Image (cartoon, rainbow, N blue to C red; front, side):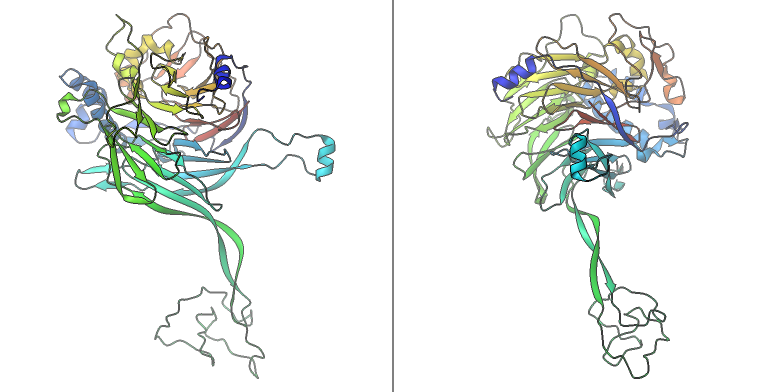
Length: 570
């Protein structure tokens, strides 16, 4: 999409609707194994008397701006999640809920992060369902390429819970973002981050060494023990005539040489027959963000990356962990003048000097790092003009962009706010080229969604490798796939994260659906949190599909529903 006519024609042409099918699932819950959370108030009278919604109302009624309020809400939500919520069902821990998904550039590997600070890696398998030699398979004319299938590769603990003693703040281990780096020498490299600390991981295969060919009688040997270091202790241990220690060889104390001695001496031999995957943390990038990290993004130069929090964006070198450069700072001298915060940031996929970041006011800024060291002045601003007379109490909240993604060639930017998906052309800053309605049916229910804090949910978005389709998540573990065209797309498919994705088809209603009378302030205390759309389908606002990723070269989607990873192909 860098000015090529073929790419523009591809976007302008309406894509053919796809038929999505279930591929596989990892960690699916069994019947009755649901995540249930109970709000148990602490003995602290402040926490007992003021809920998150009351905090929002208290500060909203003051002179503070929405940006200041959003900072407070983030802190309060994290606080309440960490000290006030407890799982009722022990079958499924809160730590198992997936919080990040990412394909690598080739699509052969997939990484997920969860709230427990773990990173799980999957690799693509090219095995077939049919056995036989190559000639027989060619005669049967089986297709060589089919939908991608993945298998479990390895997992490791990326982050641990920490405590900031200076600020008296507990830092949870939840993985916020994962980004793949360039592979080298058969090893995999990736970045993972929680709220404060970024880590650079290397996952590679290592040979497992074992000792064999001992010159002892197996009946009298205790087993092949480990090899000790070169330093010899001064303790009293049995030694052989040539100075060898029997304990070092793993022999029992009653070992005795055969009559006449040993005809030949065989030293222990190390053999490497098995391979094991070993994760190793190569760098730790810490103490650079005062607020919670919401984004990390690799640069196309393969040497640098950015990390973004609510007010700042820092530029790092992968090889230097103790120094970063602050390239964007939106923090005013007086915090009362704060009007917006940074919500997401992404490097351009091909131009190493360009990046984009979104804000809580619904704008996207394109930055050229060649202009100045401090990139507070943007080169382009993308925002949709507000329709006169349409402003309401919720306008700024639903306009906040939760995620942005560049198309593969960098010509288009996809953004996700609470109500819509928008596709922007970086060469046209007058408005989005396409707008996809995701939650328009929820507009009459914004007051109820505000009461139960669902209006602050942050949904991610993704684009297909060819740029012809976009996808994002919704409630009741549903996600929507749209086709891109300049004349307005009619290709909109709603799928459910289950083994039967086409079970529930939801169309965007042409008339407002009835209000949710069951939603109230008692949501966190066990009130009903489901609604019904115009088609009669029930919606569960506690089951939300926030994270999903599109395979870089094929029509394949991976999405997270609680602790389950579902994969679909078309």
